[in-house]
Amino acid sequence: MKIKYLLMLTVVFVLILSACAQPTQAPAPEEPAAEEPAAEEPMEEAEAEEPMEEEPVEEEAEAEEPMEEAPAVSELNILWAQWDPADQLQQTIDQYEEIAGVKVNVIQEPWGSFGDRFFTEMAAGGDAWDMVIGDSQWLGQGATQGHYVELTDFLTETGIKDSVTPATLTYYGEYPTGSGQYWGYPTEGDADGWAYRKDLFEDPDNMAAFEAEYGYPLAVPETYEQLWDIANFFTRPDEGLYGVAIYTQKDYDAITMGVENTMFSWGGEWADENNNVLGVVNSQENIDSVQFYRDLYECCQVPGLSNAFFTETNDALLGGQAAMAMNYFAFFPALASPDINPYADGTGYFPNPAGPGGAQHAALGGQGMSVISYIPDERKQAALDFIEWYAQDDVQAEFAALGGYSCNKAVLESNEFLEAAPFNPAFAETMTFVKDFWNIPEYGELLEVTQRLLSQFIVEGVGTAEETMNQIAEEHDAILRAAGYIQ
Image (tube, rainbow, N blue to C red; front, side, top):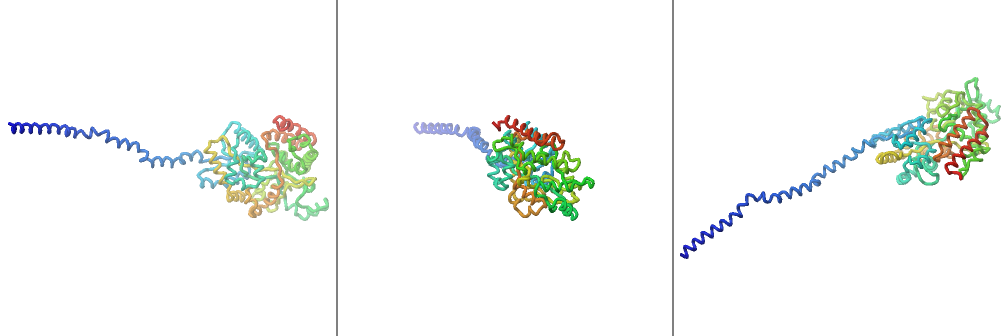
């Protein structure tokens, strides 16, 4: 019984074991389903790691960012006046597109409307241009009214500040004067000088006749007294020849700049160190200098030049009508070209002469390149990148070789520059004694007064020199007092 019972128990035990073992095996086919979450965890981890797996995609996107930005800075526009230096600048910078992938356009506006067009756009906070090569007189207005980006750190950190002559940095870039704050990169140095017909001056008959009449040899005038004699000597209406072609244009600043050549050389000023103008603008020196300019215009100016600026004075010499022509040095390359000037080989150049007291000065021209504050940041950076490239010595040498007046020290001190053009030595000398008009924000109001009143007296013959300068002094005084410059 026990054995049988034991056998029965054994069978039962085996059955029980089989039954117990079967549940552990039964879920086995479902084990993948039961462990599915565990199986998916690596997938979830894989998804979490997708950025790592797709890093090349992100890197590709980063690599494409410049391509996305490129259209915004693929082109830059510079506003400048319509004249030869603007053409020379465009020729110089055409290579920049190939170097940097950015096309730079020089937009030219006639001198008469240049200032109005620019400041109208600036008053509206416009971004039609990325840069402007503006007159030195614009610095105060551009800086204080927020039109220009301050370039102090940029010019200093890049070393550009030390690459230009100190005088040009002051005149074309700094405001207020002496502050060490810069708003422009000196781009085109310029000043008034003179061109003359060497063939007339060196003609033996002319030389003999002049010395017989005036008691000294006919030569380049070193003083305004000599210039007066020479102008009268060559004024021969019956031959269609006249002594001078000088600035008289009423638009913008032409006649004011022309008068400054005599005014400064007579020892005159626009104001004293405290901005006082009464007794300064209408000083005897200024009155006499304006009278001289009027007399020179009346006696010896080429007929028809009652509204003359750079084009008209050059044309008078090109046409054989003028023995001497006043102009900015920037316009003399045309006179040195045989293709343009039939007298090119016989044309010489000289600095503005000294006045009766020995003072010798010339009206400053020239401009600095400023970045417009209203353009987007990426365009500002593109503009700065362009200026940094353009300021390089070799690029500036190319600009000078085309006839531009670089302000780069290395270029101006080179023999290549002094020998490159017949007018360069006179230019280099002139830039040592230049003087300028006002550059405060109110310069436009001050300039309107001088243009209007000087034109009335010199061209139209209205009033006297003393009355003219008294009125200019009074109107300037009112403008400066209203603006707080005079207490």
